[in-house]
Every structure is written in structure tokens, then in C-alpha cells.
Image (cartoon, rainbow, N blue to C red):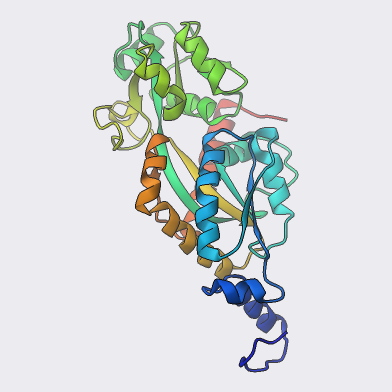
Length: 332
């Protein structure tokens, strides 16, 4: 139906696409909600179970996105296969901006190590916006003799293979971060995979393993309880939330690992839709009221546009593919 007062145009494919985009993401919510062909709601897929940081971000962001677009935003958890089931679902969804996904670094590490995926992680998904990034931390038991990253490296060199480091599983960001460290620092440590980061942290507290690279929130309670000690952060510069902590890069030049959280759409989504949504998400994550939420996760908002966000995502996949090839890490 042609809106009142709008000029009548021939319904070529290009004109129809432009009209649909305008209908879907007009800045006037009332007009958008009443226009035939526009999304009636936004489905925000979270490819993990409720309760984690990704789910938390989604539930904080959803009502703010709803207010900005004038549409209901429904969070839909679709866990499985390390986040890949939700990503596969998104790749098959209509490319009209009605279905989005909020996910994290697991997407690029999964793409790097999983041999057979049901979707193309590079062409089947389009990056709308990188929301935030944050460092991981190298932690040891509080009773450990290692009080610096240098001491940990020295011990690993003196006793090859004798230091065990935990991870959330084979191919996880924790695992690949440990392998990147071992490769760049030229040390030999033994990887001990767990089914999630929580049991790995528990075994580190019990001194069954000697170290791990984990997210800040996963270790915070144990660090505050003086059961674990942070040796360094994995970001290229010191973290704003803990400026007293040194970086791994200060002793292993070039080492850099950061967790990221981002919004994705189906791969065929028009660039105009991606750009419009990117502006909305950037407005949300840089608002003062979200600062506390991000700080609890040890994260900082990003200001990348859609094209920059996608380049960042593709670069992350390639980085971890290189480590997976070098260290012979694969998942069937």
C-alpha cells in the first residue's frame, strides 16, 4: 500500500527494497508500526543458555533497542554446539533486519576450529556492530609461587610440559589463548580441557591445575576472596578497570587477546539496513546507563561502524585459524 502523500513509483526491485527498508527502520515509530511489510518485531537470538554474559547483554540491550526502533524486541535463546546452532539459525533467517543475533568471541574461535559447519561463518553472517571488547586475565592459585607472568614463563621453560593450564574446552577462546601464549612465549604447557570455565576455575582454586587464561567475570569472585591471583591482562594496554595489572604483552611483545560481543544479521542483509542498525546499537552501548553493565564484565564499548565491525570479525577468525593450524587443533 502506498503511504498517503507519497509519490507513486513503479515497483521495480530496487524501489521496493528501498521502500521496505524505509518502512522497517523509519525514525517515526507510529508510522513504522502501521506500515504493511515492515517487521512486527525483532527476534534477538542468543546462541547460549540464559545466565551468561552474552544473555545478560541481550536482556539489557533489548528494551533499549525496542524503545529506539518502536518495535518489540524478543530475546530468543538457542544454545548448542558452542553457539553454532544459533548462528546457523540466523544464517537461514530472512535478511530484512527482523532477526539478529548477539554473540561473542566463541563465534570466531568456533569458525576457526570446527571442520564441518552447516553455514558459512564468513558469507552466511553479516556483522551489524561490535558492541564491546574486554581483556582476559592470566590467573594462578593464590598459594602459587608465581607472582608475575615472567615467573610463570620461567617455570614453564624449566619444566617443559609440567605446568597444566585449564580451559573451557578444546577450541574455546581460553584454549586458543593459552596456545597463542605458549607459541609466542616459546614455552611448553599441558592443556587440560573442561566442560565450561566454571569447573576449570574450581580446579585452579583446588590447585589441581597451575594456571588458566579466563574472563574477568569468571574469576572475579575467587580473586576477591583471595583464592586466585591475577598475573596479567591479555589486552595490548592496561585495562581501565584494573590499571595496576600489567599486560602479557609487556613480556611477550605482540600478544593480544580480547573477548568481544557483537550483533550479527543474515549474510544477505542490505548494507543500508546494517548501517542503520549499527547506529542504533552504537547509541545504546555508549550511553552512560550501560557503562556499569559493561564494567561488571570488564568490557569497554566500541564505536566501529558495520564495515569495520565485519573486518574485525573476519580478522579474528583468521587469527585463530592460524593458531589452530599451527597447534593442530580441530573439532569434527
